[in-house]
Image (tube, rainbow, N blue to C red; front, side, top):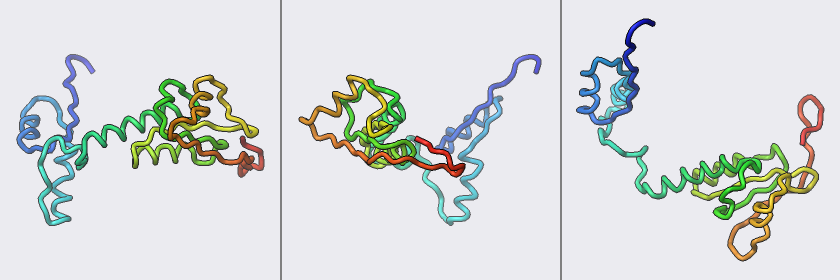
Length: 163
């Protein structure tokens, strides 16, 4: 392309007046809300709410933000990757690889806002040998629960052993 290139604008603005104003600009607008809303309304036989800042219908914004922070924490501490901030953990999942620790941590974060790192085991012991992770596990004075599962090898479809 030669010369100035107009920006592409992607929008999900819910308020009709805001969307109409954006459509008056010279920029190409991809209006995700407008593309589908009329069809959805026709199928449901009802007009959708046109309210800004509804955050997916979240009534309690603080709880929503807490859940998002818990998801970020679970991702940062997946498979023992991060040790920063482990003192914030509500639950610590320790189990062999490939048994659902990540899914469980994400579920607990998304549905309940729980901060849950997960740590894989190999041969019955936690893989990471960090002082900070050990401190979290040995601190019995708080209410954190450490979930464990016995190590067992997993045989893949190829017949090879996966740990």
